[in-house]
Amino acid sequence: MKIPGVILAAGRGSRFYRGNKLMARLNGRPVICHVVGQVLGSRLRPVFVVLGHENETIEHLLKKRFGSFIKKKSLRMVINPAWSQGKSSSRAAALAALPKTAPGAVFLLGDMPFVGAKWIDRLVGVFERTGKICFARHGDAVGPPAAFPRSLFEALGKLRGDRSVLNGLGLRKDSYCSVAVRRPLAQADIDTRSSLRLFNRRGEVLE
Figure 1: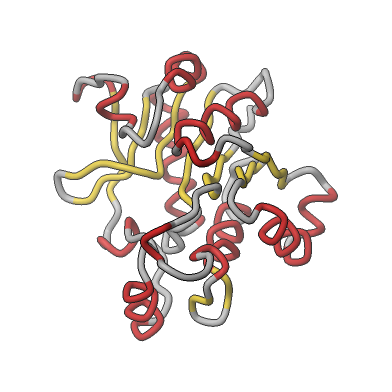
Figure 2: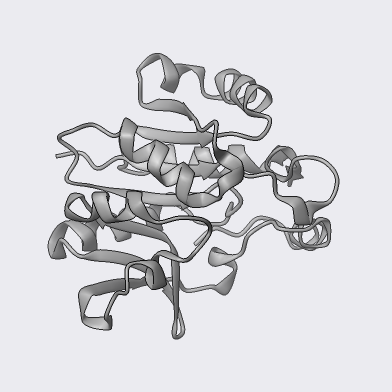
């Protein structure tokens, strides 16, 4: 059974100061295109992109770049009118759009362009074998991307604001598993203009 992917890409990204960070160029391509391209290269299907701030601009770009996937319904847009209320509102919007038969879903962030398709498939494989929540792990830290079973969809949908899922659900260490990333860069996000400049100098590295 196919597992859908959800890319949360609705926020304003106020720390980026001017402009939309998802539209900013990373090694010649918009950040959001790096993310969507890698997720579409994985086993996740269908892929949902949750949009909010400047949704028309991003949707136009994605239709132009990934039109064939949209035509096949492998890539779908979800508009979150309550995007200013935090990531939890985008998760709720995505959960409402997911296929009723989906055994779970993988949630990713639209500003994390260094997560590669092969690593995503590793996460999916562990999730399929264990049925547990699966987080990305580097060292002792766990975080997104993460896979969640359908049994937790209701609890996920009740979280509010930008509180972390780990704390919001009160998870014990034995209730979830994790998949290691080899490089800390794989969990890096584009939050500020200085981080964008740094990553552009270093070049693209995928996990």
